[in-house]
Length: 601
Ligand SMILES: OC[C@H]1O[C@H](O[C@H]2O[C@H](CO)[C@@H](O)[C@H](O)[C@H]2O)[C@H](O)[C@@H](O)[C@@H]1O
Image 1: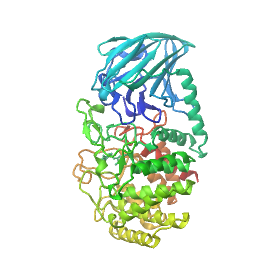
Image 2: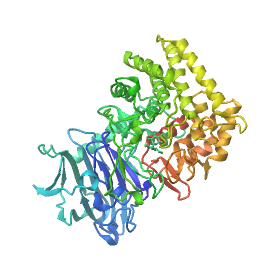
Image 3: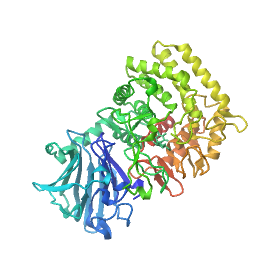
Image 4: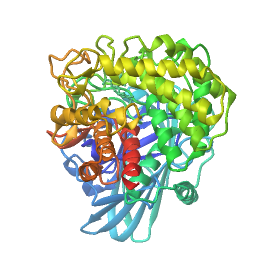
């Protein structure tokens, strides 16, 4: 199945991907970054999945067909989210009748639940279900037994109950059954995870939970204050960002998946189930900008807990509860999405130096304060500590926002963001009545600005460059007007945008930097697709420099890349015409919101 064939459901602690073939192929429990109990996404059906669809949709394989790796399976007739919620409704029309499958994860009570309700719409339909529960990313085949007619699967620390009125038959390491649904029938299935050493959890009522879940999302959306022309796309993006928030702590994951490839069949496969300061601060800015201050407050608390300690120990990313060790390893028993290996968990980028993060953090504290968050003395001492580090730290080479695995460089974008840190620190003092060494920070800001304009600009070619002295371009330079480093009318801004348009575009979308085999910058083999965040930045930058028509045209083309339920991955592969990379990706939905706002002014 293509990445865009999946839809997201979640409970703000974890999330599942539901395919258009009716199969849930990805679910990690109890947290976003826990081992998956359905991992077919990164292998095949034998790595765990749960399919629920008309019996005829199991194709020649019958229940137990291979996931995306085997014969193409029939797809649902249509699907959508119920109004402005995260409740997915998949409709199947068959020659004998029509059914709807309602999938959702209710707001968490004591344990995570996944609910699937089959609703007969017309006639009658023979349905089938096949569940293969596998703990530890498809590695552990649990013991499954029947208790009072329900299934209980146990393996290592995990156990799962499957409550349903349909008595599933076991065999060949899977459980299956067929059943008939007529118009008006409603058949619920409730899948509940709990630690294997504890008593069985209390059973939830699927229908009550459906009502509560619907109410929760509708209430949340009702406070959105964006009313512009692209409201549907903005609201769906906001719901997606909220779904990527780990509600117990306020941390925000970059995406709920690992190792969906940036290069199909290649090695550019990374685990995004962590909280990057960059991605999370940008998410926060989008939420604050649309009226969601509670999330900003929760995230500021998360940040202060996560990075408590010495400024030099700041990491660029953490676990959702602030964990610091995220060791990267490969899961060699998984064949990878369309054979894209290795499948990685953990992320080595956690140990990198990425100077832009300082700018993003100080900026988001500034934006949140301006947006209405009350002052907080810990947040202010954090700003001071970050600035203490930056006063000398900004001169160091780093891995940059693209987290290159090649040698460190003096990335221009990193220095621009160090300028942002100093600029916002000065503004925090001036505009929000804090006391701090404003002259020192202002001097630092001006020093960085002068150096970037001198060493980061190639006056012969009329463009800022990826790093000092390099001839390469980098789409992150589009941030120069967006963050206010130079005004939009500055000729260097115009010519840098034009250079990026000339050299970094593929099929009308933007590559983040050149990834030719012989380009040593990122230290990785293979290429990648167009980076959607950069493409949105180009739309926003065009709008800022007065090229509104072209900005709207690009923005709407980007919107057309969203899948049928409004979701975007990290990248788009123009050659194959497919979404690529982890999915859905906060880093793509955030600039969608910013650009919609910029174009709605
Ligand atoms: O391209 C190599 C790097 O790719 C990942 O990083 C990207 O995703 C991050 C999360 O969205 C984002 O913050 C970063 O800007 C992107 O480059 C991966 O996490 C890295 O380990 C990898 O080196």
